[in-house]
Image 1 (tube, rainbow, N blue to C red):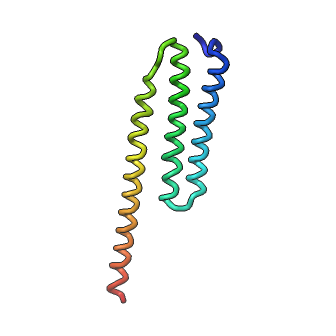
Image 2 (cartoon, rainbow, N blue to C red):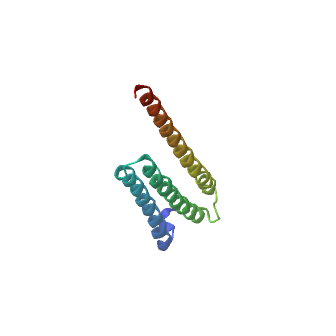
Image 3 (tube, rainbow, N blue to C red):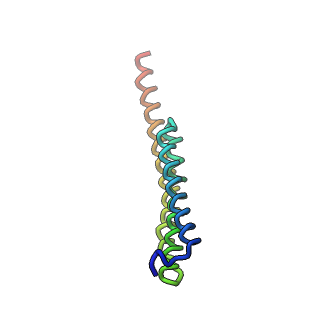
Length: 116
């Protein structure tokens, strides 16, 4: 079955999911450019890229399930790994940045106290 043989409503649904994924990626990029602090900048990409990946996964499941005339769930492995690792990575980045900021503040206080 070729892409032309897919029902029109399914083609529109897949196209909508892929466009939504692009919109989420654009929103994440806008958040990176627009927001000022590291803690604010790490939140939009984590959410938006995960939502975008969900849209692409659903589109690929629909497309390949109709192509092969059976339910294809291989893309679920990818999205499950992303759904688990993205929040963990975000937390680790936030903790590392917080630790670094505290170290810089302690170093700044230690440098200022002998000179006073």
